[in-house]
Amino acid sequence: MHRRRGVGVQRVQRRKKEEEQFKAVGETMDATNREHVDATLKTFKEALATFAEKHKRRIRAEPAFRQQFAAMCYEAGVDPLRSAKGFWADALGVGEYYYEVAVKVVEVCYATRAENGGLIALDDLLDRLGDDRISRDDVERAVAKLHALGDGFRVVRGAVVSVSAEFSDDSAA
Image 1: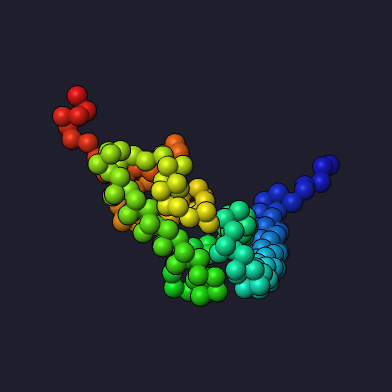
Image 2: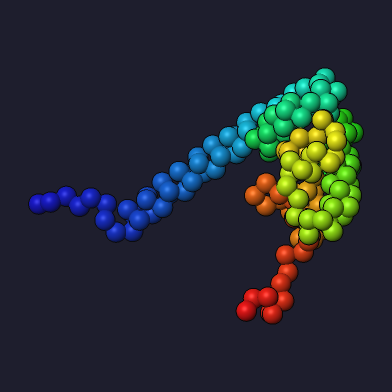
């Protein structure tokens, strides 16, 4: 005679109980991991803030260092340029810096629109800005901030476009 191996209601109940236990253990592990990641990220952000405060002048003065700092921030999920109001703007003034660069970019683009039709090469723009502390990356970040105002300003293939991208039906034909 063959012995029955828990078929029926008992086996289903036992399997359901095991699944519930596995689920509870998984949820506990997820919560623990999440807490650990949150604590690690908090510690990293605090260290990043200390670093930023210590190197504030260098971040503002050196384009390459500023670019590396911004890349490090983005990798960590921190956006030091998100707002002109907040910790990063207060600590570094970088939010204000990019707004200042954006204003200069707009001024140059409007001043040269008659001669270039609203399309200016980044290198030409940098020359016209006349500030060695402003890099291509700075201009690209500043123009990205202008995107909030609409699609009138954007960087396309090494050039700043300062005219709307809209076309009428006549130009599509």
